[in-house]
Image 1 (cartoon, helix red, strand yellow):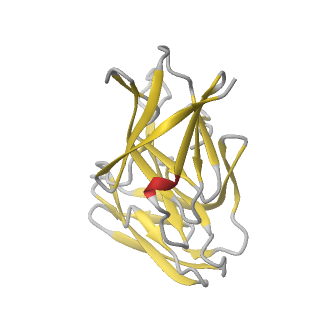
Image 2 (image 1 turned 45 degrees about the vertical axis):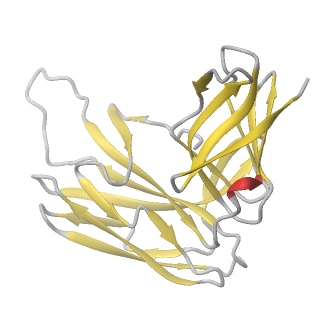
Length: 226
């Protein structure tokens, strides 16, 4: 995902998976109705102190090989900001518009600063707060075999030729002789008909992209683009 600004007003934001220690979020991938309607997620606190949480929803597209986020239009949800005491939970109820099964959103859950907390005299004014980034789709996943891959001077290009979204794991590049090198982040999302670019590998001579979807391994031949 295109990185959001992480350093704000002297505080560091740590981007974590939705199941990381601290706040627990379920589900970690949100399924929204293709024809519009209601969905929800639950945020629970495993922290030992009170915390204030903010939820934001962004429309998600992929253009120019990158993720593009903009404030969501037509998505209603509440509450947007709420407090959690240790061991408590909050359900966030959402209503999404009819997208004919093509809706894709990023849901970002932030721990907000504790205004009552004060650092000891002389201590650095830097605190670590948590950010969780989730995917929400209003359609079914596409065919895993629909991934097309090419190598160009600007990197590895992945294209989704299916009508559904794809979630790829364990990307690696392989040579004809069987030598392989891991590439890209741990998870890559491909929206329907969209393309994502990944920084090029340091080595050359790769001919195949390996990846997995839902634990199943797949491979596709690389096209060389000059």
